[in-house]
Image (cartoon, rainbow, N blue to C red; front, side, top):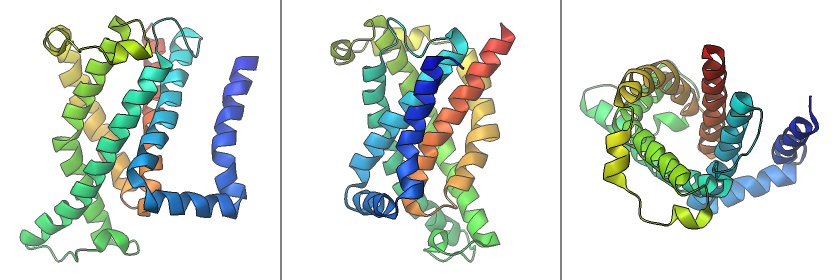
Length: 229
């Protein structure tokens, strides 16, 4: 293991260790998460999802950063997406069980807050399916657009806030890959099962687990890309 890998691992341990070994830190996190959920969602995705992208780059290229990669703009984008994901969690966890009840299923409105049961598993799976079919495709497309924009502007933070050439980037996207792999494979085979588990967790852990899932998927995709080469 190279020194840069040791440093990266130490950073990850430093981020998570306080919550395992310090009850005070865990209590402070829960309080902050309850009082400022959107801010915490921004921070969790900005840090964890960006670390996942750096790790994926390390697997593909041997480096955690490179010219034009744009760690800071990626962190900003992930933070904004984290707020959108938190909003989606709130909307779909409230709306999907109600919709299922209107279909005639015997689901109490607070089913996701109850202990594990078959009905809670059904509700979690249903929320995951609804969110990933309605919300995930446009979020993935937006993320791809911002990735291209960051690359086009040299990975600078200032460049991130320049006008985005949406039409040009959308026209240049590899839609066969987006459809056949990103949408048709990662959504049903990874995101729906993974988010089913997410919605079984207590609410204060759902967003951080979702950010960690982004790291896992990034690593898997990077490994797959390297194996293909």
